[in-house]
Image (cartoon, rainbow, N blue to C red):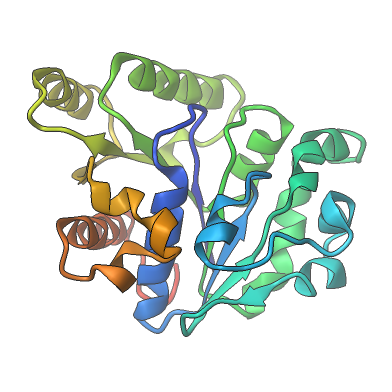
Length: 253
């Protein structure tokens, strides 16, 4: 099983759209795939038309085992399951903090899925607290959407600095440009600068497109309702480049 977090310590960068579309693409290859919605806003859950309900809420989630397994739902797509979120996850940091080995609880919660799934995608809330550290400890790879703006680049640098100072492997963090408008000179310049300054920048980007925003209307991945669109092809290219760069096979690590 390969675990992949779509993560950023900045909001509004396209995390959920990325998690939904890449998990969909992974499942289309025949890989058994689970997307785990960790965000109390439950946007990924909404996109997949699943009721935002966890058995016993955040407390049941933290206990893991049967409580978590009972919450997993099938989606409308073959080979793709969803562990939904609900609003109780807003207290997940507090709940983790009260437990022993509080920064490694998520790894334990996800471990039973190893026998069942090839890929587990985590749609993560904005967090660099105990939950964020749990995510860094639990996953094989972190994929960070990065808007080519000054503040987005600044927060990405803060994430890498945090990892280096706290002995987290920054080498497993990859980034790609999200919500790109190549008509903007600033976007083009920042993309060029960041690509030279940082390793782990994937050679593909997701444009700023209305088709991606329509996911909320269709409640589906872009590749499902608009398979020939630029948006759909952009996510496919991102997934292909990510696999090439990280040496992931179609059936996991």
